[in-house]
Length: 91
Image 1 (cartoon, rainbow, N blue to C red):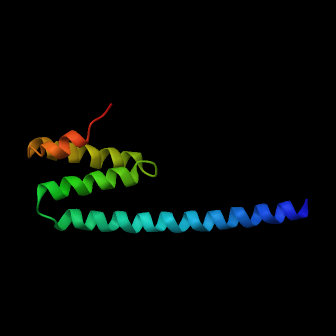
Image 2 (tube, rainbow, N blue to C red):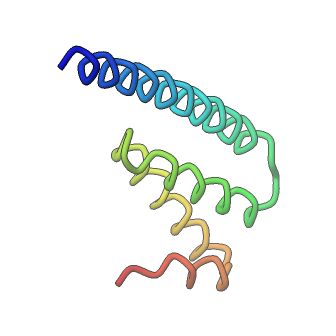
Image 3 (tube, rainbow, N blue to C red):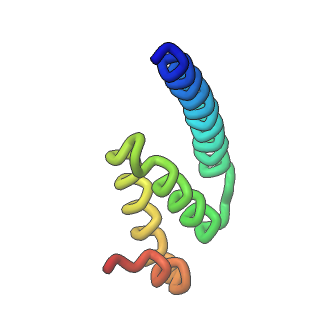
């Protein structure tokens, strides 16, 4: 029983530290994407960045994911970015 408890503790601790690191990396990626969104000039690039942000934020911050997804769709419609607009198809 002690061995099982020790193994379980190691697994939980390792899993927690791995998850925490990947969450931190995702935050850094999102911060980088938000910065690029502010400096990029092409609308197609802006829409693509917004879609990446929406995907990255889907589970951790669904309100922000919805915001970026809707902004990308609006931009795609406005600028007639047909290929991007059709890739955002909802079943």
